[in-house]
Length: 334
Image (cartoon, rainbow, N blue to C red; front, side, top):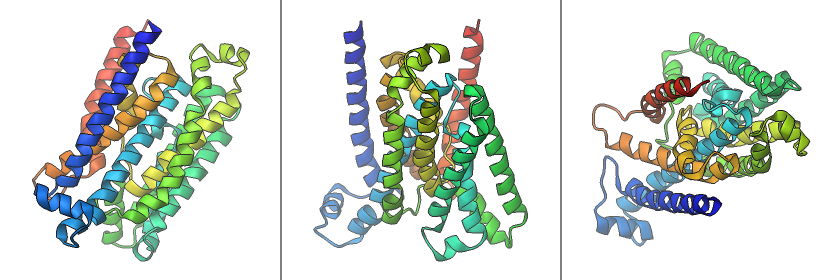
């Protein structure tokens, strides 16, 4: 049985990686300007410093890398948080990290810093994510999983109020429009600066989240059983919260709010790998990367009016899945 699950897991990872390779190629080709194969290969090799080369290296390749990094961060953090909280509806925004990152970036936009310094919004977003995670841990300290979730909800509400206040007191309609546009989430117009800025934080966050694997397996038996097996729950919560803060906070700071990827990815892979939390982490990360990259390609191909925002599109796709999941859980509940 274990060998069969390992084989299915390996086949799943291989299939997802193959699909990522195909969609990555499509991401470099697709857009409002489609690149013919010959121009694409010349531009990709950098042999000609032409329009195709500029499109690939300055526009589409940074966007591709960010889509893969952010999608993987969302999928991985979603799998870890569902394991920590033992709640199948958990997702990266549960602990207030995404809202904190959004508030930090909104502050940079509100005070005009983002218009003068390109890295201001991402840096403020990272600071907001870390402060939100610290506040969540401080409020939920010693109270167990339920208290941690409630603390995250309170921090999310606080950050949401701050964002609403910034919109209400916005000094100009343009600033309010810029804030709303950023909050809808997008990978458009992102550069190599954004890639270099968030990649170290994503790596640190991923390492912290992967360190939870053994403890998550033990926690699936219950908190008392996990502690009897030598699991330090406080350390587990610290790794989960700060791992999510670094990974998802950095992602939100650059792309804006992108929902449901972290919720959907773990559920898509569980039927193939089983319900052991540690076996879900890597497939969920790869699946999250595939989902976000695929969604980004689709919005570039939709041709009506301005380009649809990525966060809007993922919400449109994720909301029906969320409803279906709630109905399924209600039917299977004792």
